Image (tube, rainbow, N blue to C red; front, side, top):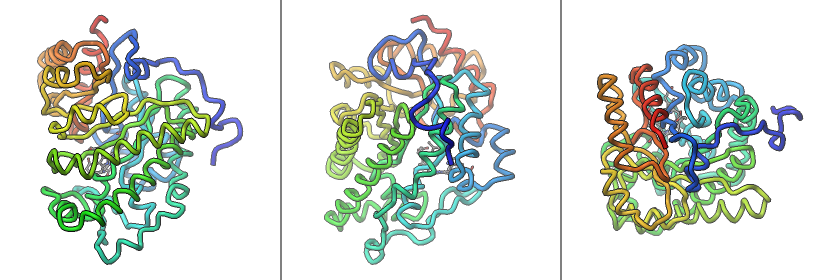
Length: 361
Ligand code: CP3
């Protein structure tokens, strides 16, 4: 556990606030960049580390999670760190079994059914996730103020999807069936997840997270109607819940990012949920994004195609310049439009970062 001189109230002074500034609509000295899944399998040092430790052992051991969180920060000039964890720690804390199978991904061998739904153990779920808070507090100290630290969670719908499907799915047809066939039960489940997610994220902020991203990675399986009915209200409730609980606990208001992957059908509505930043997936046209969000007072983040990292160096640098030109340099955080691939070349990440930081503001 964390010692007295590494508590959540004596953190080192932050030296790089580019992301926080961009999130709030202020002008940073350079365009900020971080990369979704930046602490992952494309890093040879992570692959070495994984030979010694299982995935959830790393997640659940603050010193190990901290070490992996720092790996990309040691290697690159990134403008943020993101705590090493997974969105599926919430279903785990609710009592579900989650396995990380090599070459397969996450598997939940006993998925949620109408029959076992009431066995979800929400009482004390956030206290069972306290290890994430400890990892955050430790990492804030070990970062020595170099860059801000992200906390994160999966969104209610994305977690519901994994819990019902029992893992990844090409269609999410089982989880979507619940939305159409059992809307009331679906709302109860989404409400339960919303409450746990809100308290979990407040706990992360209390532990030292300086900015939060909510991953709605499975938004792309829904349409405008389903997203409005089963997602937007809960996403809004998470943002307002975090704001209210932060105020009550005397915590600073941290920037909130929503990444609703593939939810192009509801981009304008996403801007009205109380988030400071919207993550934009790689399929979206930056000009369309900016015109849709005109007058919305919101920062955007994204959206280079993760596959662009395989392009020749000069072409990659040019694509970055073109992307920044289309988005403009105001209220903008550079990122990929989804997570980095496990076999992305490490040199391309350097090229990406250098191309972003060399753009004059
Ligand atoms: O570097 C970081 O971004 C922080 C750590 C992080 C992980 N997962 C570690 C991880 C974050 C932010 C996540 C989020 C996550 N997890 C999402 C949302 C982002 C997205 O990509 O849409 C989702 C859908 C998951 C669920 C999940 N975890 C899947 C589908 C997989 C398998 C596919 C894959 O990309 O590996 C995981 C495994 C996972 N999560 C790994 C890592 C480093 C690799 C597993 C391993 O090391 O064996």
